[in-house]
Length: 334
Ligand code: CUA
Image 1: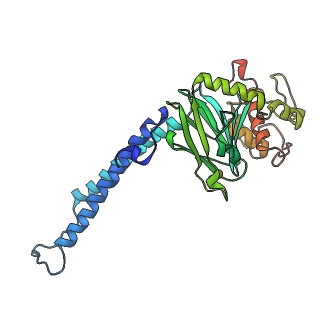
Image 2: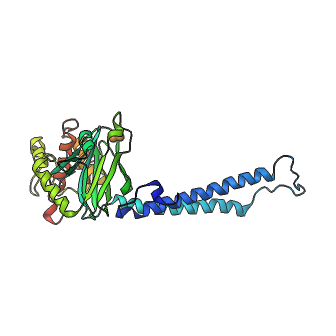
Image 3: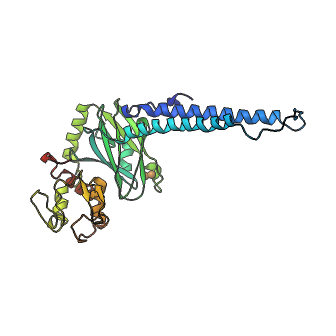
């Protein structure tokens, strides 16, 4: 019971080394607390039971300073340890390395879509695909190379889903209207289960697939094969020019327009009409497309129409990625 593998499959995530230790630590704290509290209860019930004579010639004490300090400080210290430990490990699993490979995961009733922007590849884990698990010998779920940090950016088309990979100790909600990020680095080739861990309707329990961890060579081969046959995610520049964005927003350093230039915006601090500031991250870009009035850039009027309901999740994602890359290679961004 005090072995993590009693509860979970063997951990194969290099970034989740602390998770199991913390889990076992909390388990021990819980068991010891249970024994101490229940033990005291039983002892008191026995010692002071009705009909048992005890010496009552000294008046009962009103309080005991030492005891009160002890039962306040000890639990506080234990919670402090759990907090620091948990925060450290949570951060490790939430902040991807700079060189992490990016994979975009989209949750949808009731399947997962995995996009590989670097490769222009899309892998769908529809229920039919998942049943076979492999099509023409190729994996149909999340495919990742071994020993490589992966940045998983998730969003949802409809309701809240949660991506849960027990062998990686990874569980991250994917939400509508917002991106969430998690990271992992698998240490062993193999196939691992991936579940949806947030009840999302009738087929929630069927929203499962596999994670295939393969060698770097196999990964390259699978990506090459998928590039040929998969349609891939939407092209951001096509969406940008086809949805009227280009009519108001310049994409070059010199360009001007009704709206702010988008060149080199990503990763910068923005000042808004109400004087507040904020970082232009992916969630900001996404919000600015869906709800342009939420954070109006200083010096610009409330001109932009909302694109809510006009772009698919795929197109929205592509737009965000496209704007993110604008001016990125000029050296002065970030
Ligand atoms: Cu998706 Cu449960």
